[in-house]
Image (cartoon, rainbow, N blue to C red; front, side, top):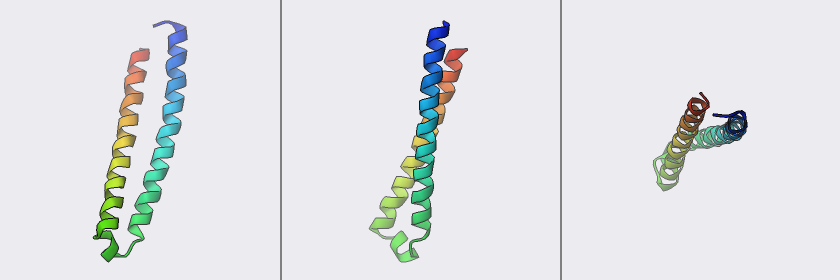
Length: 76
């Protein structure tokens, strides 16, 4: 891979890192909000929706991390 393409991958890595951090922040905020709900609301429809959002955000972070690893491998 030439220098130009490596630099482009580096730029994408930087963008993905920023997106990962933003997604992690959203995850933490949603998890904290869920944990601060009364137990009765956690078990209700609202709590279930929040719990699903938390799981989806965790998966998104993991996917971004996987993409970062793949890009780093591509750089050689």
